[in-house]
Picture (cartoon, rainbow, N blue to C red):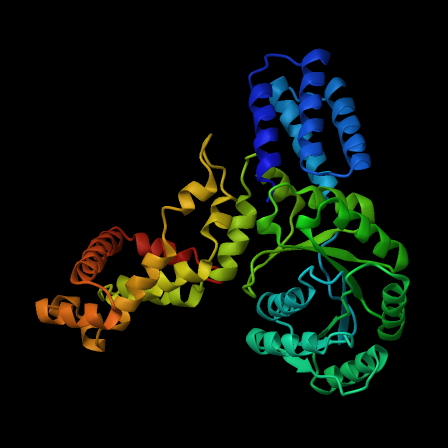
Length: 447
């Protein structure tokens, strides 16, 4: 996301860094480049106008910190205004209401609303320790109900299935009663998606909002829709009291115009970014971090949050304790590490949060780590017996041939894996002698 905009703005930043002083002339040049970059990113024109005016006013004024060069001061202003445009002052996603807290998801058909409902349910279950129930009130598409039921099973949350012939209002009332019976903390209602915005859809949404007393009404919008997404969001915001926005398909949007416009247009914060089809593909939106990423400064806090979410700390702690006690790093441990790498998913997304050196792109580094190769290595280990995994030195020539055949690979593939494991063993032994693992262990949260 923001690839094109980021490249353009980083070029502006690089030019301004070298300025010994700021003049009205070079500020105007920089502001012109910023305006052009925002237009190409498909940002709404009123938003561009307000943004550029604010940047120019602050830059031309005496707002230059003594500890910074004028060029750095301009970068600081640009970062602050980007964060403000993205909604840095907005509150986070709170659920301080009497359970079951009702969340209405609204949006046009094709925005990814049903998948987002399941992603949000999984997020609330895994990250907020909530018991969640999902329900579809989309009577126009019975298949949507079955799709959400399947997704609810994958997300491991409760699901309420509507009875034949029920109206959306009747389904919602029954779902609230069902959520109370199972003592669910949160009920997420997936409302009907329409191919176009019409009064009937908005009136149905108003009725559901009134009936359920929804604590959150979130607008789900396809970030790749650009200006259309912003216009539809504005219409929904006028019709019903939205409390937040979820941008879907963020990984497929190179421009980012919707993300930069929707908060200013609706007055409501972007709460989450959706990426991919995996149910873990929901990222908490952080305006400050996103502004940093756009300007090539990285988003270290966002990276830490994502790693904490996806890395199994208990497994990591168990491994550290094991090796610290002098027990070897066997192939079972290597398989755990490889599987966690796969679980991290989207290595490019993680690298995108790091402040990489000039000219280096996250996708270039991510391309050097082949998930297919990792899966092959896992398959090799799975083809071994329990004894072979625990004692790799017992794997001789005949065993290698059997293991390779079982994994559908060649003996050299098995040799490479064993060599990799031997190298990791040496590293673990060195860390154990120096007390490195003990220090790492003390760094685990809760210790």
